[in-house]
Image 1 (tube, helix red, strand yellow):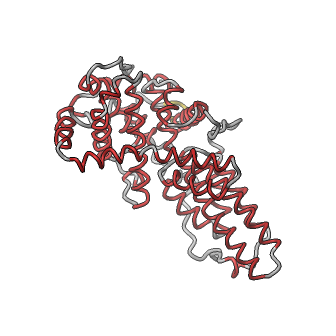
Image 2 (tube, each protein chain N blue to C red):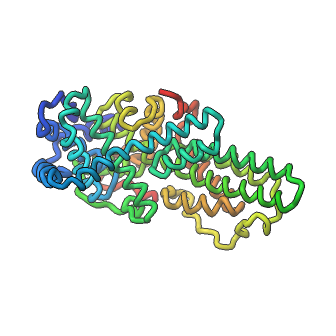
Image 3 (cartoon, rainbow over the protein chains, first blue to last red):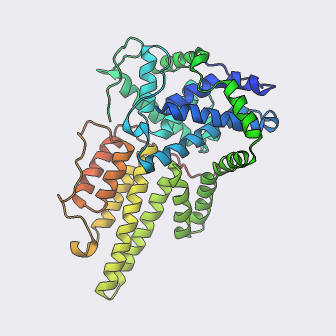
Amino acid sequence: MSPRPSRPSSFPEFYEAEIKRLTAYLRAQTSDGRWVEDIAQESLIAAADKWDELMTYDRPDAWLFKVATRMLRRNQAKAREQCTSLDELGERAGPELGQPGLLDLHTAVRRLPRRQREAVYLHCVLRYSLEEAAAILAISESSVKTHVRRARQRLAELLADDGSPRPGRSTTRVRRTR
Amino acid sequence: MSLDELFAEAAREVGRIPDVEHAVSLDRVRRECARRSWDDIERARHAAFLDSLDLEQAAYELGRRCDQAGDLGEAARWYRVAARQDHGDAALRLGEVLGMLAERASRRADGEPSAAARTRARRDALHLVTEAAQAFAEAYAAGYPEAAELVEELLDLVDRGRPPSQDRGEVPAGRGCPDFPRWHGVLSEAEIQRLSSHAAQCVTCMKEFIARMRSAAATVPSGALPDPFARR
């Protein structure tokens, strides 16, 4: 289980508590390694800049994920306009996480529509409650629930091989559907 | 392994990411903070960028207010601003508002006494339908499969009271039509956008496009959908 952060008392403590979660979240959202680095850096600099205020928040991590999500959407929208998005080209960059079955999960998550992949990762992997995920994504709780339900359905399809889930045993990648 | 077990394993794996694979190191963050602390322009730019991240949500909220007040033109304007920054809810609502505006334009066209004015009004309706189809494609790509059904309603509007093809600036079927990917393939966002903009001007492709979107929508669970625009 990924550790849920307690209230960090300093920025380095906050960094230590969040960097792994932020890295994993961004990698599940985009295959573009440049964006993962840039967005992690910019959102953490933003957090460092306003740390005095942030440390009084109940969930400073939620603020960090909210900023990172919006930065990523901004980048993706711009890249789609300019046709420079690696995600659109279906390319993959940056190191993968975990074992073979998890490579498939991360690949499959990246195949989901953006709202679904944001919602499912925040709620099912990072264990944010529906309410917290809704606050991070700036949508209603019921919308998060719907996106999570749809994402789970789609992931089950993507990860299934002849109707049976194959994560864990597989060295084969999820079939490319694009 | 079930999906839940897979999620649990992924969650455990997050905690095991080695330091060398962190997206950015603490040292780098500190160095960059220190560098920017001497650069007022850079700091101001960063602060402005952060402030601007809230703009799309603010634009969406403004759009909703105008929408509720019945000012569809102004609502479309604000939804458009938000949708351009990848706001999926705004894209869905933009499509709906533009569809309503297109319907009004279409009705206005029916009531026009002169042929020239009728043609103008129908062209307005067609432009609105085109933009609405693009907005629905955005919303579909953002994770709202119901957008596929809304495009179908748009088709009804296009089919109703159609002027001669030379007046409505339609692409004749078969000319310049894009190749649709194989049926079992999933359309990428770029493909959806490309196909939707063409389909809005070509009835043959519009039907194909809708069939694809409906087929994709059928793979997700049906049932009552929550209102993403409901006031929280």
